[in-house]
Image (cartoon, rainbow, N blue to C red; front, top):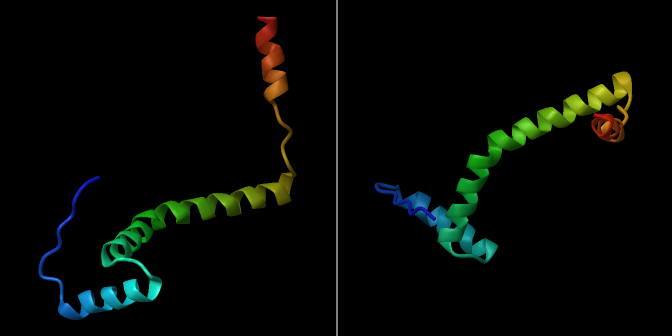
Length: 79
């Protein structure tokens, strides 16, 4: 893993993180890792939610598409 170092963090921020870590029963390092993970994964979660909504819209409009895997395999075997 990569090491990250932060400088010039306001003391109130550090104290807030320390209090949140204590409340959640983990180290301040793990609290910060969790916060960074949530920030970094937010765009991916947003995209996954958009895809879920689009799939649901597709199901409502045209229904569930049949699985084409058996047909594709049969066609390949014919070659």
